Image 1 (cartoon, one colour):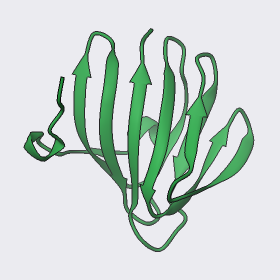
Image 2 (cartoon, rainbow, N blue to C red):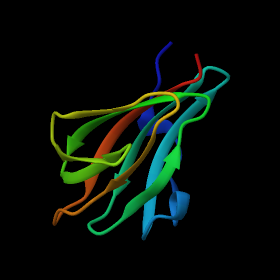
Image 3 (cartoon, rainbow, N blue to C red):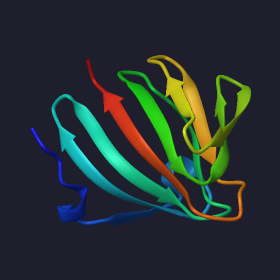
Length: 109
């Protein structure tokens, strides 16, 4: 199956999981999970949240930021990959000067 992100409408979510600013995303969603490309402008964040039923993988396409997963802070740079396993909590913060672009997979299996 081919997912064409250029054909998917971008949505903007303000205060995602209690975070700051707005996050924009193009999302493919089905019963198995989500695949998305998201953009966090400078200063925006995805608030801390727990993955009760799924795991999440965030691959940094461009930009800089940080992840806080189960209390451990890690720097995000282009080419790095953040993994939040089922049962863990995390947040993502764009503390850089340009947009932070992420390719994300949320697996329900």
